[in-house]
Length: 174
Image 1: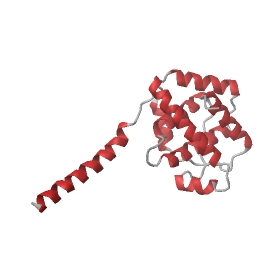
Image 2: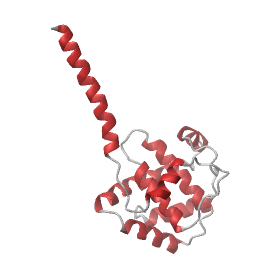
Image 3: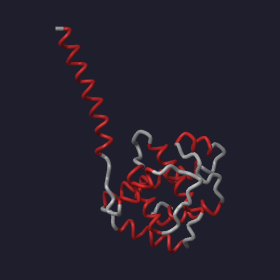
């Protein structure tokens, strides 16, 4: 009887662990925007040798990545958020877009989202915003190393942070 109970307990634990793993996969929300640029952006390491994109399409790819990768409350979210923040700041360093152009690009991107996706995006971009604030601190290099964002354009100048702030304002979190 003890062996049967031990076997059943082991099965329950195994199924519970499998359910936890499956639960993270179920939360993925596809963006109606093109997922190819986001997939390419998510797979490419942050590197100082790659020139970040500058246009609204590249901003859309970054927003796709934020929506798909950053899931507040999920395991590893803070590290993925730091990675997205580093990519956003790299993009911001050479974006060459005015606040109005950024606002129009973000608005066009969010207009394609469902209400559920907008809610998820708002939480996700807020997490990225918090990560940008963290990257202003003295331990920024340590955070970048922990998140695997080595080789990015750190340290960023004030203009990059101001451009990122324009993205956050256009997303409605400022």
